[in-house]
Amino acid sequence: MSSRRRIAVVLSIPLLAALGGCGARRPGAGPLAGARPTDVYRQLGLLAGGGDFPAVASFATLAGPGDSTYVAFGLSLPNSALRFQRDGAGFTAQYTVALTFTRDSQRVRRVERREDVRVRNFAETARTDESVVFQQLVALRPGRYVVDLVAADANSTRVFRARDTIELPAYGQGARRLSEPVVVYRAGARDSRDTIPALILNPRHMTPYGGQAPRVYLEGYGVAADSAVALRVLDAHGTTVWTTTVPLVAGSATLRHALVQLPADSLPLGKLWVDLDGRRAPLLVSISDQWMVANVDEVLQYVRYIASAEEVDSLRAAPPAERKQRWEAFWARRDPLPATPANEFRDEFFERIRTATEQFSEPGIPGWRSARGEVYIVLGAPDRVVERTIGRNDLGGTLPAALEWTYEDSPAGRLELTFVDRTGAGRYELTAPSASAFRAVEHRLQSRR
Image 1 (cartoon, rainbow, N blue to C red):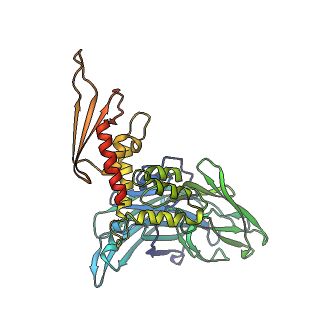
Image 2: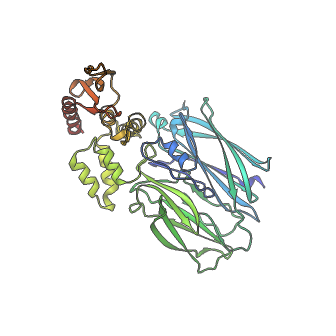
Image 3: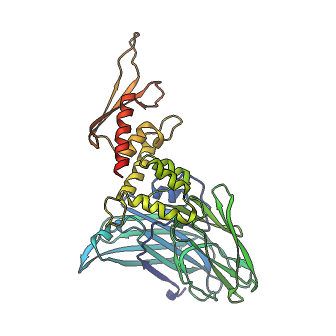
């Protein structure tokens, strides 16, 4: 294929969140709560980096010129993944992306790009949300391909390597067929397969809860001028949570298209599927790409550790039109550095939930709901931990195990908390004096916020 059929776009997008998906694959279900964001992307079947290079990548397909198929590749990065250097009045970073398409053990195409990212101030270099979007469009013959991806920071050793297998459908000339649903930030019209799609992909397929409406681009090939298709949004259990009929009237006799806005205010939190005539793409509705939740009730269970009863009631009772405003106000009141792009309190809070989930689970209790998990979420890591037993019984056996957590500089000064496993089953509870002392500190923190 000619090089004019390739495009790459690099953007700086001030969005809260993102998530990408490959319409040709059906990832399995997996838990969202308490997981690292990149782990959640992998659970959804996406390509995701980790550590200091948390890139997320996805593929989508549309009809290409002749009998070819366009594969649209999107990659999402936070600025914090790149090493910036001062450049005049601002800062500049560079990154590289290499894609290799192999079929039947034969290399078919290799694409290599090097891109610049420029920001105006130092604070922008530390953004942890999606702030860079890269995309590449390649026309290939239909079939199954192995794709090798290497994305790297050009000024450090940070790198993301991944391999995926994608199936490019045959959208054949003259056949009546629908594209897969493509989740985008923007999409322009085209009325011919020979025209390059004017898309800006949403590589992570994520949308902020109660925020900007997610958009889905659709194409129909060889369909009648009065054709209409059913577009559905399904939850993780396959239940339809929203549906609409989309007329395919724009375009030409050979290619018609539509751009659909999904109702962000009425979609539930968590993992969803956008379904077009059996072809599906994932969609994640979340507060931020820094943490994932399954539904409103789960969010409220988390924030009750840091919110007053009145705040919880207000968030629960918020009508759809006011949800976003109330959530933003809730976190803004706790943002220690409002001048920075990130909300450090929010990010730290949900990182603590993730850690508590991993480290303090007990029989029948998720880690974030255990007594130790709650203390960790509210106060953070203790300065010192001592494990001991509370005496010995008459037969020489040990009595319940105990853990002592010490905080040298809590809001109430030095704080010692004792957790006791009274049954020997691995379930630790605060002693009565410790529970009283902890609640007093918790109440003081809530009052400050």
